[in-house]
Image: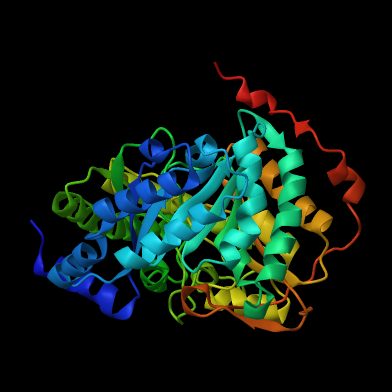
Length: 452
């Protein structure tokens, strides 16, 4: 039985604590859209996306109205385009990105993810073509997101791809410099990328996924923070238990929405992603939630321990609430998208090196971080390499979404708008790592990859 108190409690979460369903993401396989010409393949892609996702937005709005649950984004993820485009014989894959963009506009969704490649062990020719097409693809589209998986615990780190992505990120920044390098905000590189992630910019539908599937991403840092306000001064065991209970309630709401969307769209339900994803709104910050542990400011000593505990408790509570937890699931720390992170970065309490330490225990990695436009491609590759090592050797997902903003330097601010927020330009250690990056090759898989 659901009591009146529980109903009122849930309503308060929505109305006062910024609880929302961050995204309903429909994954669509494009495996059957491969063709011998770009035109034929793109036509198939457009038709299939519109056929499957044509009612996605209307369905999300109907569910939101029925339950009073804010559903912020409706999104689409597709099979990595490097796989689909391999048969066409072309070298420029920008037309595929433009087709995805056109389909996104036709369906009315916020983003479409899957202009992607999986190169953790090496390149195919199609992978190379896709990666070289990323800057122009992101500069010429509005809703397309791109991702590249560079490493995994099983295979090690593809350092040739790491080097290439530093150059690609710089080129993407240059082509979108009139919008403060906005293209880089839609480009992420991964270690151990999950195949069922509903969050952008890293969403794609992995080769092991169904023909079509519904994945839902929830969010509720404000709910957890409010719960912790009631146990101020109590021991950390009580804090962990409080977070677990809040995560349980949030996850149950997410599963309700996911199953309703699955039924209405006649598409299988895939997973619930438990990630605490912040927004720039006051009261919806992971940084402020961490400060509720007793930290004067996010980034001070103890922040990594608090984040580790938060991440673990969220997962424990969510797993009790749903048997289908997947995606990234934990706490996000995107600087530009979190009011508290922005404040901590501006005060100097939160630096790039501290953020790297925090990524050892959170869901993703160095996310939505603006750096000086003068940062070299090799330095960007070095930052990526470090983050790939953390993911590969700790057997977890890590990612990098850096934005080198042309013409901007430390002390400047950039404004992206919407959920992407704003960010201070953060200082970067510019001591050269170029010789290391130019060695190329592959960093071998760690010893604990030998599990068979």
